[in-house]
Length: 73
Image 1 (cartoon, one colour):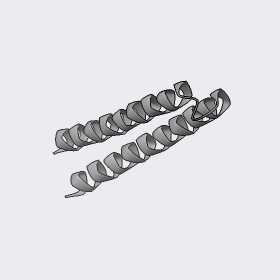
Image 2 (cartoon, rainbow, N blue to C red):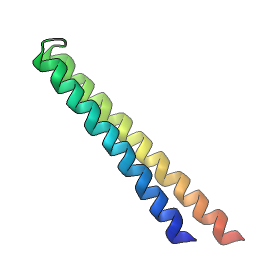
Image 3 (cartoon, rainbow, N blue to C red):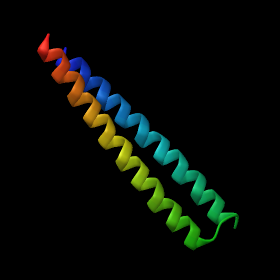
Image 4 (tube, one colour):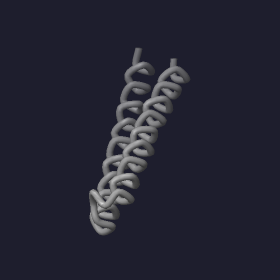
């Protein structure tokens, strides 16, 4: 059961990283098309990384909670 939780945690983290990659590509396009300034691009990039880190940490926390819950049973 613990392996299944670990697998699901990793899948969730991959999904978050994929969203980050797609969003970063969108931001780059917007910068190239002059829809946003270079400064705004870097600010958005930092915000995106902070969100990615936050949700990756939350996924890890939930995974640990679920593993602990399974071990109790």
